[in-house]
Image (cartoon, rainbow, N blue to C red; front, side):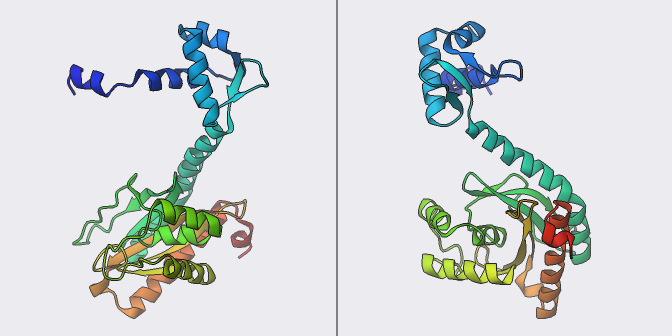
Length: 264
């Protein structure tokens, strides 16, 4: 990237806001606006303006009327998302390898993050003649494919409504559900079954299955899924794929200390 382009894309206000967050350490958990001004070499008025915005978004907490600040819960929440994604991926990795080898299909591990479906791991079938576009780190609508609906099925109704309002359903294929009530009825069936069979709702010719992954707090934190070309998938193979995906989800949940699956 050329120097001029870098300057064009550079955001000085964002940089200063990030510098404020970086100023807090284990030894400096509470800082005044004066201290922040001295540490960062910024005018106090600039610090106050940036801190006010960070407080509004929950990244800083202001203590009373004093100009004393500490990191807010939003920082903790975002850090928890990263921690969970990393720990889930590490825990799930050997199970994904085993699942891919058993099924000879492409398998996925996904989470919901900032109202989007994010693929945090993927194991390709090296013999597959198709390449799935959903790479590790790819973001999709929360209702996408087989992994998204599994995660949405365990959300509160009001959260499902919010996500559907923010990211409306689309007709990706002729089998896509485009009415909210139909989609929510599907979510209820997914929750009852504990698994999903997604028949070409996001991609023509692709069928996928997925199951939820639970953690020690009895929360669904991820989903594991497998996908295949519909034309090469018999009913017997589909049942086997579903059984193995569910078995893998249970094993990962047990490793994440989910009580119900530990006792199985």
